[in-house]
Image (cartoon, rainbow, N blue to C red; front, side, top):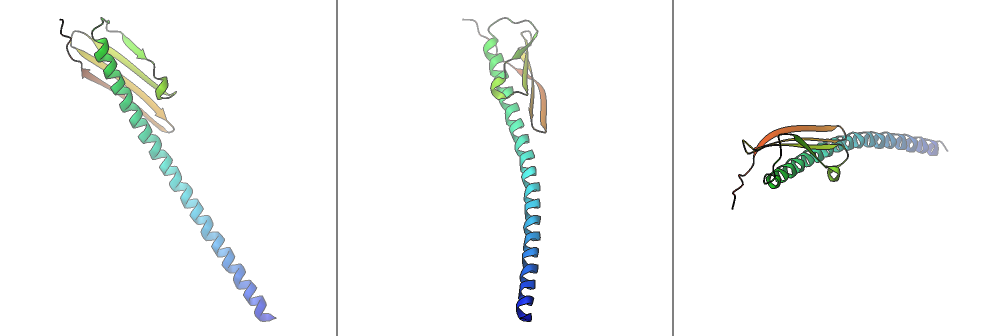
Length: 124
């Protein structure tokens, strides 16, 4: 009878130690998943910003033929998400476009403002 009691005690210790190991693994997996989420949000914001800048540049190249004053034009960015904005300022004297983009995803918030040279319009 004593031998059976010792075996039950060993099994109980084994089960408790396995539970503690499993809980530590779940804790570590949770931290790694949080890190992956932060990195994914940052990559998403970077790609969103790249797409916004390219869209703004392409829009500026197409609109160059039309005469715009040096006012800042706010473009519709609904397709990129709720927390995005794109402002384009065309300068016809210098053939430049100042493009300002802002993108937020989770904790990642990216803002960028650059001046791009737009192609000259050749009158036919």
